[in-house]
Length: 116
Length: 115
Image (cartoon, rainbow over all chains, first blue to last red; front, side, top):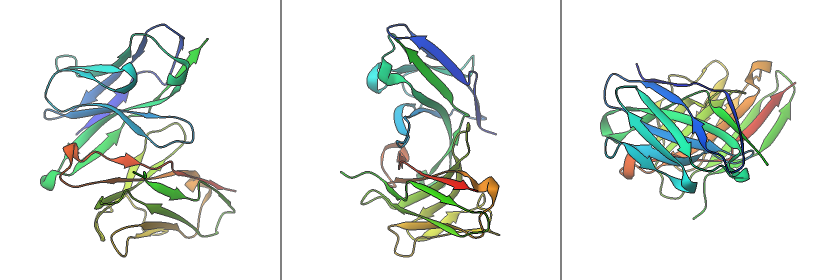
């Protein structure tokens, strides 16, 4: 069965320092993996996605994630945090069905706080 | 391009009352999803529509929840009667079949509080 585990429910960093949000996945086949961000009172926004191409995936707003099959991990990183990065982040694995439909399975989320 | 529109954004009701949420997907998106997001958790799929057909409603509690998408465009999710445990955010998303990875675009959600 496909699932994701976000290892930290809360992460707090200072502005300008690196961000690391950890995610481990479980999948019986090569998965598609996503990171979504949710700002307060706004819809979920896709940050980046991995679909079996390059293992290092670059997303919007300077975020990137590396797919490591040996570690079943897909951690999200950013070299330098900005105040506007404060939000809830979700790691997501997809279940593929016939007809091209992918069912999204969300992790529990990691709340990122950025301090001045 | 307008995103997924949901209304109302907030709703407060007393238990045992009915409530309805409305969603208008992105124009041209034939697939529509309703998700439930409990506090401190990730969204969970309730129902998925392909055009006007509900093709995956296995997670929808059918004793009190219902949904419709009569013309294959906008959709309504209803709860009758509401219970205290229904307090959550209800998210709507849409995607276009055949697009890259069928990316889902999410609305801002409706936050329901049941008193």
